[in-house]
Length: 587
Image (cartoon, rainbow, N blue to C red; front, top):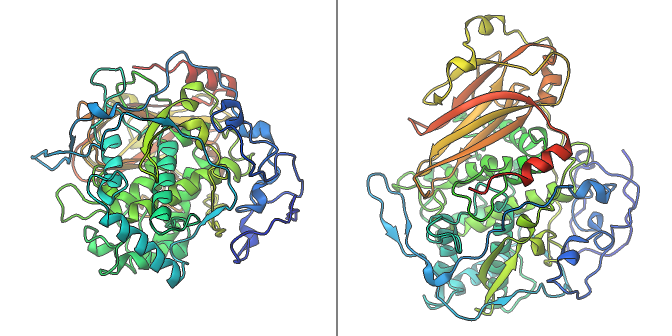
């Protein structure tokens, strides 16, 4: 393994070792020009400055030391500008009611914020000292005391203060459960999930939440913790959140999943903790590296002004993100409150800790995963970069922010504690012999005879490949129509021999689709997902076969999912993929 040669020797705030297990990191000795630290004040509203971070950030000195040799070309996709318009901030005085989605009884919820006429365009302040967000499992008693004090003071603020605990929780309700319409688009809902807005919106949300807490305790260096559920040592609810006397405690959690229960990111129901850990690491490898053919497969599909339906979630959003929400949500509550439903998720302090790790996944994917595994890292489409939101800042001032100004967490003044990444090389082991599917293939029907398919149980079928011979191919599940008010999830297996759906650490596991309950304009939402098959073909030695056998395994109970079609296509060249994204319909 190449040694890591830092471009600078700038000391970091954390005294913990950079690399607990160096074997889990890929490093490069080359020091590129972009790897420099600059905390000088800049014009933060300049779009070109927002994108041109090359030559300013030495990320090897800042986080994990992964992919230090990445070139700028690997960090910028070459998409053509789209013809539609970016999503704009909602009009606050037109905020309506959201819905809590109770079964058979949909109660309206007022989660609208205070209205003010003065909105300013936010400028990122200069960074003089980097905040380091710590792993929630490794924090000190002193940190726990400070964190609880900050949340307690937030809870004590007047109810009409936009920085108060419930007002902050209502941000997620308003943006995610139908309280806002798209500005200038009639009654079209504004939804920040299931598209390329997912990561940027939540990054800004946590940014201001963190600054408000710091202001309340007079500590501008305060940083939110992250729930390190991608590491075996962090795969339980962090202990500091289960103290009933703590300000960060929430009673509306699944009591069966309190520590020492190991989080089940696959929602498989497997009761063997060791197998669950192995499943979890396989899921992380799959959604971060193995299943993504391009930037949109990870980030989510384009979402523009006038879009009437959610275009499609990225692999991380529909995978580990959704599983954590539902796993923690309380089944005693009709709608899975608090974390298990979008309208109430922000009422559990654990939500912000969870999304700290979600944001960390974006940071890792952006800058540290090897470029040969994740070739495209950024979206240059102006409809993405100029999408905007409004938040109240730590001074209770309403501010307008854009996606382009949140693409670099270091420019926003925060970073993450260095934690081992055991999933980085957790590729399922190759199958020892050629997949034996004669028994299955002889009885499995062709996909063309089954679709459209109502997925209410395990189903198995054959899908013809594009041609013989090795090629980069994608499995496309089209027109996935779901009841948005329900938790829904299904896994995808290819040529699965042992039919043991509770074990995911095998080459046959291709990926997943899942959603957190939320309000949708017509109760249903339709999207399409793609799963990259290149590694799977190699691992199972089936690249030369004419067909594959696909098994769909629902993890939810009952109806709620209809899949319009399934097919295998060749992965388009990057230029073609960019053109297709630019031409994506806006309605």
